[in-house]
Length: 149
Image (cartoon, rainbow, N blue to C red; front, side, top):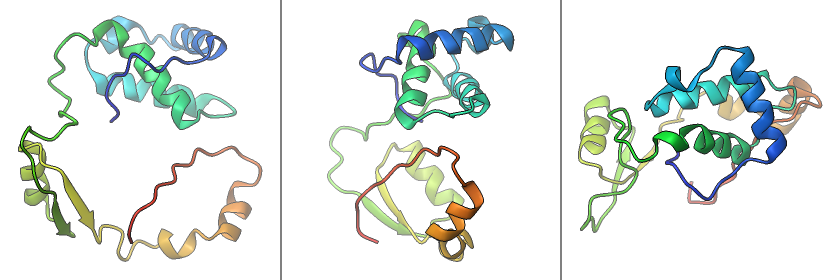
């Protein structure tokens, strides 16, 4: 989950649309309180309900706006996004098990995880042709990254 950033703001029209949707769907700040996961789920529901969906930037700007009143409070459900000071290496784990992942999270250690998608049918099935046929003209959010495979 992205951390709070006071520099992302949604467009005014999107902010108003979020407020209207929140009111219509009985999503109150008191219900979301200081739990980042509740804010993330509410924003995801909102974006899913929009005919155009939300871009990555819109989603995270809405999340930041929703979380802003609570940004100064500790949230026991979040995991620090930074590595501990002094981290000088980054583990490389191929198909780690649950206990290995838990140890990384507990110690706030960075890691490169490989092999997690091995055997996942989507890596073969989701060709450009398949996605065009399945999604048609619907808007989808993409996140493109560079890196070694």
